[in-house]
Length: 421
Ligand code: GDP
Ligand code: IMO
Ligand code: MG
Image (cartoon, rainbow, N blue to C red):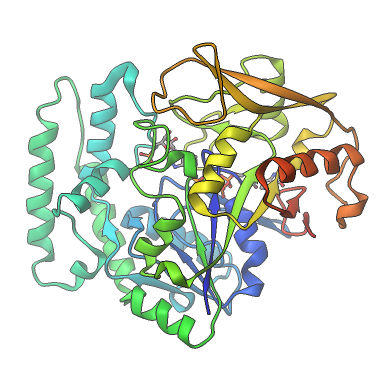
């Protein structure tokens, strides 16, 4: 059996959480492979609206296994909060969530360092979620990190103290930055106790065992391809590999064991934080998209920047990930726009190009194709053929340009508002 991978093809917040929840009944195991509490994956069903940060989005289906893989970074404070939230919703998380011993821990000082580094960057700041993501992945690659499995070691407190000391020393060089470690420390150690109540596993063995037993596995990505540390708009990226290859390193799955690659695409584009965004709208249309799409960050509440669909960027993401299916989300948000624009090429220094430029700070003029919009409320539509012709034309255009079929159309945030083709 091969593992399917589901990931974002834009700058995150494409609707991954919703779609994973919808697909979970088809799978035995859902496994998050990278990122951490910078992610906010929203799900809606019945009267429940919930946002997950570290925990896989299959958790609301009681008979499924949810694995937090080695590529994920875990803040015990956020983890413990998420567990409390799930218990209120009658989920039994200790039974269904397994945690990789090799996942790295976000320390209170990682969060403080993240804030301090952003403070020091001033106007050049990344716009990070300030959850400690950059610093924890830095420690991982610098071979200083502390992993989940270490919490069972008698030396754990010593490891914590010495890494914290190193961080405080480094923060002290940032002039004018104030912090209070005590604010986080007690909650952090309480979170460690919560983590100890979970089954800690060698997730690479576990996942490969499931595959060999013909169990189906869905790998859930966080962020989006254009925030990937190698292929995103560097340096305005996150600090992990958000792409399909990240599922191999973040779970221990061989490339030959990857099956379908599901690319989640919002019907337009959004971005939170700094960095280039060629199709960004600064006018009333951008404001309309933000309002109608409720485009405010699931993790930080920041307003998301909004713009039209960007095909050169989408084709790039499809190439990097080997996407087999596009799942188009939030198409309902485009209802009511008289004209819909799609960027099909960039003009850079007077030259037409369909490639992502190396220098992301250069000025990019998007070249648009315009298409007629539609007015119908599509949120109650259940079959593809009943969608307005203008939306079907929009989808056909995306398929023709990318060469990838659109096999799911999401028409609302709720589980039920999903059309399978
Ligand atoms: P993720 O990070 O990719 O899981 O996406 P987020 O949850 O951060 O952001 C997506 C937002 O859009 C959430 O508020 C979802 O509830 C919502 N959403 C998902 N799919 C749809 C859709 O098809 N239509 C509408 N209107 N909202 C959607
Ligand atoms: P999900 O999984 C949208 C953005 C931040 C910032 C940059 C770096 O919900 O799609 P970081 O905290 O990772 O160092 O921030 O990446 N970012 C996201 N944007 N959705 C996310 O996750 C994001 N996770 C990080 O806004 O620009
Ligand atoms: Mg999100």
